Length: 73
Image (cartoon, rainbow, N blue to C red; front, side, top):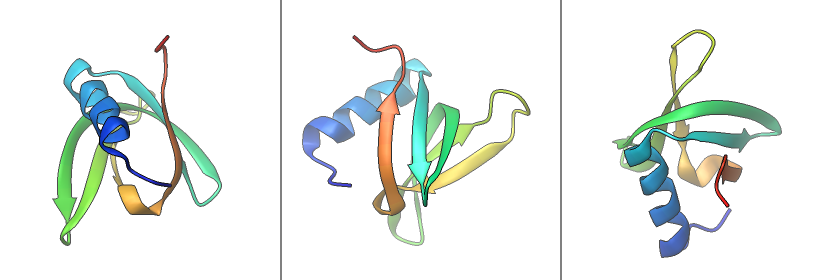
């Protein structure tokens, strides 16, 4: 997945607003609430919270196949 400046802005807005995002990593889709952006091992990552359990998951951006911010027009 290519991370254009516009796409990164969209993700950062989702984090700021606490929006839900659909993340596709290695063929598995996760629906999480965007919590924060961080770096893990020098790589950009999204931290998302699973709505059912409250557990946080880390998603390395360059490992994602797709990411959609849900509820956007």
